[in-house]
Amino acid sequence: MEYRHLGKTGIRISELSLGSWITFHNQADVQAAMELMSAAYKAGVNFFDNAEAYAGGKSEEVMGAALKQLGWRRGSYLVSTKLYWGLHNNVNERNTLNRKRLIEGINGSLERLQLDYVDLIYCHRPDQTTPIEETVWAMHNIIEWGKAMYWGTSEWAAAEIVAAIEIAERHHLHKPVTEQPVYNLFERQRFSREYERVYKEYGYGTTTFSPLASGLLSGKYSKGIPENSRAALEGNDWLQDAVTDEENLVKVQALEPIASELDCTLAQLALAWCLKNRYVSTVITGASRVEQVQENMKASEVARRLTPEILERIDAIFVEKREEEED
Ligand SMILES: NC(=O)c1ccc[n+]([C@@H]2O[C@H](COP(=O)([O-])OP(=O)(O)OC[C@H]3O[C@@H](n4cnc5c(N)ncnc54)[C@H](OP(=O)(O)O)[C@@H]3O)[C@@H](O)[C@H]2O)c1
Image (cartoon, rainbow, N blue to C red; front, side):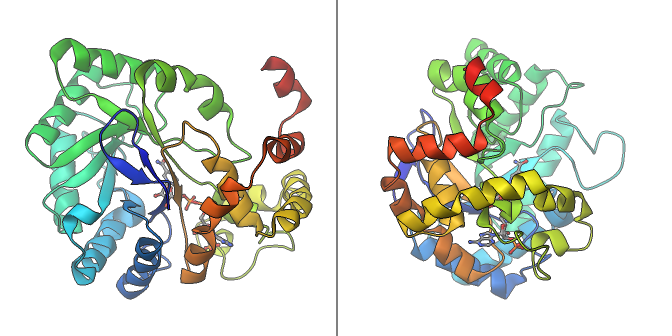
């Protein structure tokens, strides 16, 4: 496992990490979570991603209980949480980054995670109704109080990130240090274009998510929706169109000869492709089974074998002609 600096910070993060969205509580109880996390930790993963909203707080509870039983030295791993959607359908408590909510939110997350602090706290989405200055001050306070080490943004517009950085600089507050954006072979536009300025000018880090497009890029949906897959889970109908879309499946299939030349799986190839982007600090993987973690963690080796020529062949499958011309 290689470790990359998280943007301009002194902290180094494993280039592959593990997140708990959808899986923890829904597919993995505490025992299963311990097994998934152990497999990742053994492979060198030092970052575990979570959020208040995942499974309505239960994902944090599961990870907290797992960490407690695993008993790892706190200095040996990083944990995150994210705030925005909230847990209660009430005014001031949902879809917001107001000061009161953020401070109540971090306290609740720490309780569920059974931790004194998280290493990273993200604003899970931008909030157009709260002044960015209020959010920046609240995040600064959370860090000053020792409840989080660093803070970041998730799916914020580049202009909003720059505004937050500039407010923090003006008042000598803790700046956000990383974005958590989607980044995979199907969804790379925003990462590659809009955010470029924030990596280059501000040295912003990135902890990217959904590298397999929820499993689509593993090829598992080529013959329909397997029973034990994410798209088959109750309440996940929203995913079914994307994973059965004929055009998407043709693209995934077209990767197969490249994967066999490299003697790797489609999932490893898709993860390795994400790792090749030097602006990626860590690729947050997801897994419902230990075998998936073990398979996915080998993507680092595959990334080392991805030559510019292979990357061009992959682009030829996924990048539309029109997009190439715009570049
Ligand atoms: N900030 C945000 O807004 C945001 C949004 C989404 C995710 N995230 C973070 O990013 C993490 C990763 O995202 P993601 O879970 O969407 O990642 P993903 O890699 O796109 O999808 C992971 C899912 O794909 C399937 N899978 C994984 N490895 C596989 C393999 N080798 N072979 C076959 N199937 C495989 C598993 O689902 P099944 O086995 O159930 O099919 C697994 O749960 C999340 O846990 C979360 O921490 C953040």
